[in-house]
Structures are given as C-alpha cells and as structure tokens.
Length: 447
Image 1 (tube, rainbow, N blue to C red):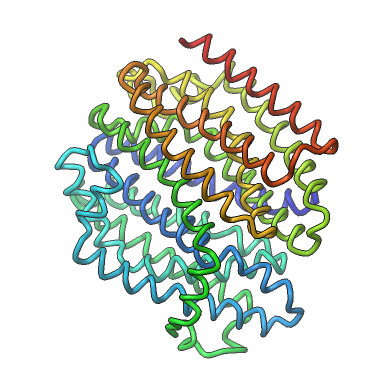
Image 2 (spheres, rainbow, N blue to C red):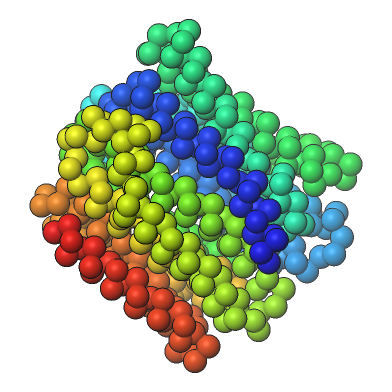
C-alpha cells in the first residue's frame, strides 16, 4: 500500500505545486480583484461538473463494474457506456451554458457584484468545451487508475496547471490585462484536449475501438445511471453546495475576498487533495474487490490521514502565516486579520473531510445512498445556518468554522450509520475525539 500511495502522491505532487504557483502568479501579477475572483469562481463551477456531477452521477459505479471484467476490451466497453450516458447531460448543460450562463452564475454566487458576474459570464462561455472534455478525461483516468497506471492517471493536474500558468505569463508579459480571460480559457481547453488524448492512449483505446464511439448518446444508459446513482449524486451536490454557499458569503465581504480566502486555504487544500487522491483511489479499488474487509481498510487509511493532519497542524501553528506572507506578501492579507485562524481550522478539516470521502466510497459499495443523501442534505442546511450567524461577526473565520463543524457532524454520523460501533474502530474514535478537542482549543484561542 505504501508503495502505491507514494507513487500516486509523488506523481500528483508536481501538479499540486504548479497549482499553488498558478494561484500565486495570478494574485501577484493581477492582484485580488473581480477578474481573479471570476477565474476562481468559474474554475470551481467546472470542477463542480467534473468532481460532482460526472463522478457521482456516472463514474462512481464504473470501478465496481470494471472489477467484474478481466479483459481490457470489456473494461473499455464499460467506459464507453458511461461516456454515452454522460453525453446526454453534457448536451443539455451545454445548451444551458450558452443561453442561461448568467442564471447559473447567480446560483453559485448569488451575492456577487455585477462586475464579477460580467467577467465570470465571459469566462464561462469561453470554457464551454470543457463540458465534453472533462467527462472524457475523468472516465478514462478512472480506468487507468484501476489498472494501476498511476503515473499517467495522476499527470492530469500537472498538465492543466502548466497550461494555465503559461496563459498567465503570456498575458502578463505580452498582452493587455483585459485579455487574461480569453487566453486563460484557450489554454485550459487545450490542456484538457491533451489529457484526454493521453488517457485514451494509455488504455490502448484506438487499437480496440474507433473514436466515433466516444460521441455516442444512450438515453438507456443515461436513465440507468440516473436511477442507480441519483442518491449519490444529490449527496455529492449537497456536499459541494457547501463550497458555493461559502463563496456566496465570502463574496459579500468585498472585492478580492474570494481570492484571498482561496489563497489562505491553499496550503491545507493542496495537502488534502494529494492525500485523498491517493487514498480514495486505493481504498475504492481495495473494497471493490474485498467488501468483507471495509472496516480494517477504513481503519488503516484513517490512521494515515490523522498523522498527516496532526503534522500539518503543528507546522502551520509555527510557520503557516509566515509562509503565506512569504509567497503572497503580507500586504495582500492586511484587510483580513483572521488569516491565521482560517488556516488552522482549514488544516483540522483535512481529517474530517478526508474520512467522509472514504465513507462515500463505502456507501457506494454497500449501496447505502439513501442514508448518505439524508445526512448531506441536513449538513447543507446546517452550513447555511452557521454561515448566516457567524460570517457577520467573524468574517472569513466564520466561514471556515462553519465548514469544519459541518464536516465533523457529517463524518461522525455517517461513520456510525455505515460502520456501526465496532471495537475495531476504537482507535478511529480516539482520533476523532483528539481532533475535536484541538478544534475547540483553536476556537477558544482565536475567539
């Protein structure tokens, strides 16, 4: 396991470093304003399409289906069936983006300024091809991950961020600032074309099927995916809605607030993404092939997440703010004195969100989507309520306290529902108690 985790981690690390550099260059070169806020907002909307709709509504049952086939050709057939289902929704959403992009933006950032809406609307339309390229990349990436082609499957992020960094540098040195959105969109679309080609080549698609199969549309497979995965889809939507609820409240704090918040949580977010990319891939593969060993696997993976969280919390306690000031300059964060608190709470959140992501995979294997749906819906309502009461008083710190509180409640409740109270999990409950204590201690420190 350690060898596999290390392979995925190291391969993904370059992509995360480049992602960190991309945000830094964007902020340093162009400042924290509505232009940079628009890039972050629209990028997150397309990530919502990628990580939530495509993954939860279509892709999350791909691995259990693929696990039934030993032959590569039949595995590709399962991927093509998934593509034919998602293409139906891609067409519908494509029409929505073309004719109702402003309405979509109002859903994701209802309290934003008109200038932010204007820039975001332009960028969203320019990045329209991603609605079709994202599913293609993601579905065949899952297939490569299952076949343990970790280097090629983990290289997507590196390519996306590299192309976007090139876009930022090109505009900064050679073009006017008002062309940033256009160049950024073009480079992002090109990066997805490259990763789609890479994933297809790695799985040897061209030697088995013609490219035209990727453009098939199947209402039957679409309906089947919807009926089977709708609970998981809505659960993931409610979980992701929390992010956009946070953005809505952060946007109300003024120009550049979204950019600053994104910069602060970037450190824990990069670590969380690296860790959970590795762990969820391996955890899902393991329990798909051995359902009777879910509890010991969950215990093992939770231990690693706990150790990483504690280590990062200690590091951020001593050097977190200084590291942020070093890479972004202290002046950027001056309007937001709660920077240190936001960083610490976001670090603790790595453990509880990471554990919940493992529980989502458990729910998929055990077909417990209805329980997951109920809990994520309640968590979504709780997040809205906590943000409403906390943001006015605590600003950004209120947002991250709300997020962490929701993930604590969500992970603990779903853990009990899915895995029950077992002696084998006593160590996991000890980890939970220790980090909840750290949360309370941090809250008292910064309050």
